[in-house]
Amino acid sequence: MSNYPKVNYIGNKEKIASWICDQFPKDAKTLFDAFSGGCSLSYEAKSRGLEVCTNDVLKVNYHIANALIKNNATRLTQSDIDILFSGEPFEGFMFANYSEVYFFSEECKTLDLYRKNIEKLDSEAKKSLAFALIRRAMIRKMPYSRFNLSWEQIVQLRDEDYSYKKYKRRRAYHNKSFKFHVLNNLEAYNAAIFSNNKTHNAHNDDVFNVLDRIKADIIYLDPPYTGSMNNYFGFYGLMDDFIASEKTKPFEHHFMDKKSAISLFDTLFSKLSNFKYWYLSYNNSSYPSKEELLNLLHKYADNIKVIERKHVYKITGKEKKEKNKEFLFIVENKHHDKNQSKRTGQAICETAN
Image 1 (tube, rainbow, N blue to C red):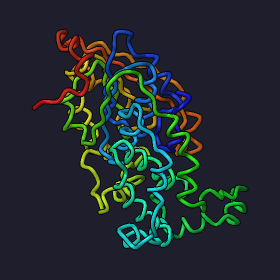
Image 2 (cartoon, rainbow, N blue to C red):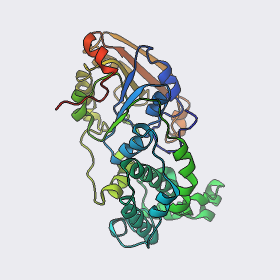
Image 3 (cartoon, rainbow, N blue to C red):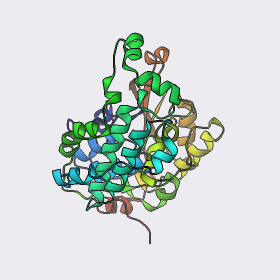
Image 4 (spheres, one colour):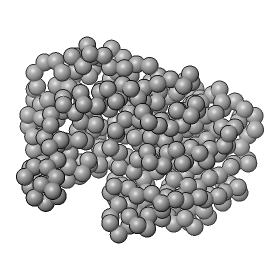
């Protein structure tokens, strides 16, 4: 996965994607990544020759998938970049809603210009690539790479003298322009695009709306870890607002509420009959516990095993870093329709009419 570009996605499986894919059965040809996020797992699976379908409820994550997984050949050219940066910044949606909330006013006007110019690009793949690059630029300018800080904190942390005094690092990249960051990452994102001679697909929906319509040999599940700090709408919802040019609403099935977590997992596992192999990532600091998840899985499958390894997330507190373990639940669904299994290698992301 050497060509996977820098995405800066909290909860990203980049460091363990190879380990996860090493567990995939040799007879599997198709994969559905149901909570695709930054697409590191999908990218590794694509690099191994699998036919990949992704889904994520966040629009910005759909664009990452559309740019790096579904897209097999389209890259941004110099003329595309000229289009993206053309014109004068103006007061649009970002200026009206997020000036001195997450970015300075002039920066918001620049974002409004780039959002307008993205629509001038001549293909959906190019638009998705541009969104992915703007996302990367916005993340690089944001302290801690997430949009849940107060404006006072942001201004303080973007002060290079303060940063040096407190952290012994100036973090000058927070004050580089969006254009600088786009150009600085352009080559890496273009180089990440490749074909494995398969057709891939990407969805942007609540997972419960697509499970009945998608067939694949493997389903990989990496939902937000309940009880952890990973509030993905809170961290990245701003970029969906940027894409939609309107304020978006938090999604319903966010897996963050302990009161509904058991019920959500139960419903999720009950809808996996289209898939022969189920892979679920979770960790020992989250809720439900390993034992509770096993009890739920046993309601719908018999052949279950769990493997584990140490894995540290950047957002993890110092105390948990030493104790954090990543679990991988592996299920072979013996009730899976054998005839359906034969079809899935040719029918990834098959949808009902």
